[in-house]
Length: 518
Image (tube, rainbow, N blue to C red; front, side, top):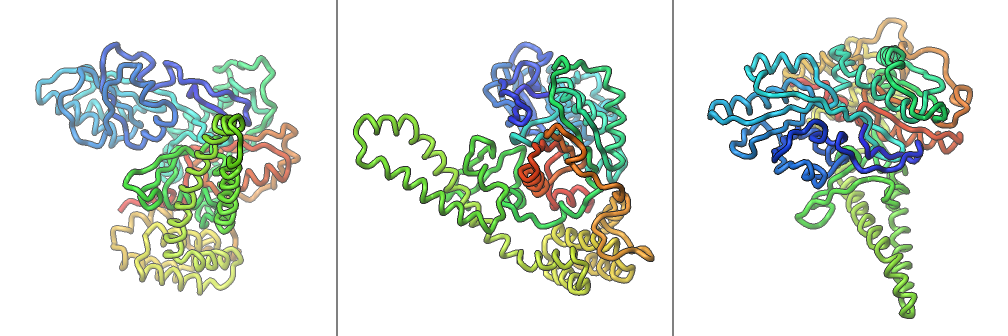
């Protein structure tokens, strides 16, 4: 687990990353080395450790591992990658390119969070197994916010819920056991779904492998394990909180967002961490988007009033103002300016996409009324060739809320979609069916049913579950910012403290793109 893990809800103190918490820290060979990084891991690495820390481990240069071979460089090369076939092949191609030039160097592949058996197989098939050493970097739960821990494994959703690959369950169970060893054993564990049951069984099997570092004085807390396929409706809905829309439009990566020229007003991009140090974001992140402009306007007036009070100050008071308040006011003003610019971009993009009409259609789906109007709207989106993930989102939402589609309606929509977006989308539609997002309506199926039969069971009231007031809710397959906002609201209403854990932070485009094969 990263040494920088910090969450006030778990009473953790920030710690600088130690030598084993950086990918090149544990067992690193002495001497200068180049580090090639899987592009998907760059936000994660930036969150955990900066370039200055890696420089201390004699990392000379950083490169994005994009398939282009870079000749020359240091005599040592480290490759930081996920255990994915495509990434291993890129590394093998780089090693073979060196061999073709008769250039010999020491190479090491660092797999995170673990190496899979298939990786060795690929290295053998590519003829480079003996030319490289391998290590694992167990980067488990990363604190992206004070109350959110993410494993940053977006592949979990497709691997488990579509392909039935259970390789990540071991990683999840081991991470949760590590969490218990640091902060105390979970008083009670609840789960719903197939992967939740498997993770719980693995946790019980691992229980003897981890010592209790709290000496029995750890947190009295509970764990909820929730499969993503238990509730597809929530991530398929349009997000209406500021943070949710920020993610939809700009994409939040590992707790950070990057704004381009349309927000900053200059050619230079600005990247900011959306953490607890940003008081402006902390106040607006979970607000309904319609309320954000008013809040930012009010905040701007308050900041201006704070600036204006410097007028008429004597030298002593002015010195105190500059030393204690001015820097904070300038920082808040900077954030305020960026968020106002982001709101303007969100308004332009969402209004262009007819957000109000989409919300009306979604409300009709939830109420189980006017299904024909909803189908007509989806057909209209197909005719306008709206972005495919948006069309698939509405189609899947219709299927899930209606407990499946009438065979004739499904056939017509499917043919309509294939004619507009191409027959290559057949694989995507097949994947949606396998994952349970698209289905035929069965006889005697209850209309307007939001959740599939697999979730039917005895409802659980949190107040009857735990007296600890500290609950870890872990989503297997991804969690949306809408769900995080809902849990924060529930915590404030009921007096509980929720920590959200997830295999990855997701939204409807990322959820559906994981199933797209065209």
